[in-house]
Length: 103
Image (cartoon, rainbow, N blue to C red; front, side):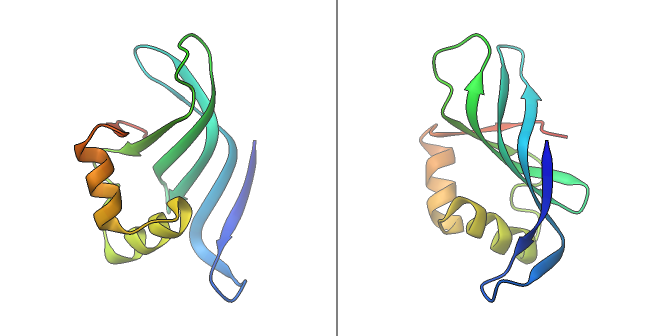
């Protein structure tokens, strides 16, 4: 696992905002590994690239409690996912993104 500070649009490190390569989460159905965004001590999102049991390994998980916690968290989550909050909400609503307990 590799942890680095997220960088802003000018390439400077952002305090308390992290990208985790090789992050792992477990759900009742599978174990997923991928790239995660962490704000302070909370994992906000995981883009899964590998899984243990199921065939649908390319999945995005958002923490149900913290995915839209604050303006700052949302700005950095948007940067991580490459989309707006409105686009993220639409993907949650249509089931493309999964809300889960990531913490």
